[in-house]
Length: 225
Image: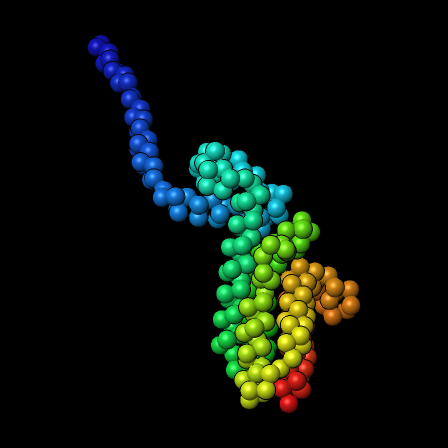
């Protein structure tokens, strides 16, 4: 009886080599600065100024620590530029909203919602409070950052008064009230409204903003009479 021999074939395991890494793109100096600012801004929103560590930012971007220093000189300079970029963006949004408005009572609610959306966007409100606590929000070396908003609002009120100037201090106080209220609402609104029995929900915040808009509209209309 002939036994059949079973040939055992070695099974070769084919290991695919990983594709070669894509050639690293060389960034222009402008692109590198923008990438570093983006990474620093994300850490600023997540953990405040104390959360911005140059080595972490460098790792996020994929550059060396000295490269960050090359572009900004110091951690303080990086944080300061991140803040200025934030302020420029939000000022632009708010100025656009004010200038586009007719200034009528029906427009105040829309403007309040635009401001609320702007201060909440990307953690703006949290950044503002962190920077205020760090003493980095104001600098005597710089002109008031919100002055342009006050001037735009002043021009709007003057047009509604048919050329008769509105009191500038009053306009600035209206902006101060709305800015402070909406910044606080973005951070502690649910807690405060909830403790008052008004509800700790987005709907409660919306009702508060509607009440604020009505208050501002009534005041502006009396001032424009």
